Length: 226
Image (cartoon, rainbow, N blue to C red):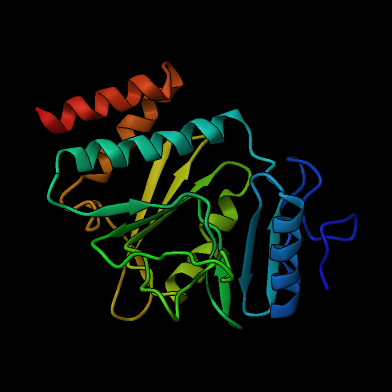
């Protein structure tokens, strides 16, 4: 079993390149359960076709600012869309047992019938029981290459209709829509946030070069309300 020790595939510092290692579904479950038992902060785990990636939260201040700005963008957008039911679940694990699992930075559901937890159940979202989220997002700093490769493959296989990657260093936003052939194609307009131009989201993130994420979110709110 994979344990969160010196033998774990988890990175030991932000300088290490993320490593995908051969593993079983049981290894993935063991890593999830041990992290939960130890109450590991910012634990990230991914499983894809017998390969496992574990990250112990070696992202930093810039990653945190981008992730929180993403949440604020969602809130500002749906304030302007009061009739839409939505639920954002940052940092939760979504999975199809025995196949794939992932812990995106943001998970967005539109409409009712969103995942609920009951005492005695796994805290992970089983996509054989619950419907697939409308949008997932990864904030990529030290893991950007994997966000655009292995993780993108996971979300396509899980049939998530829309996927965003936030490039922390370049302050750019790359958005994808799932096509009929099961592959992602880059898009200019969001379907989950109906009609929202990705260029406006990117301009909002670009403001982080000179201001706080709070003021960037306020600017975004002004743009969509004008």
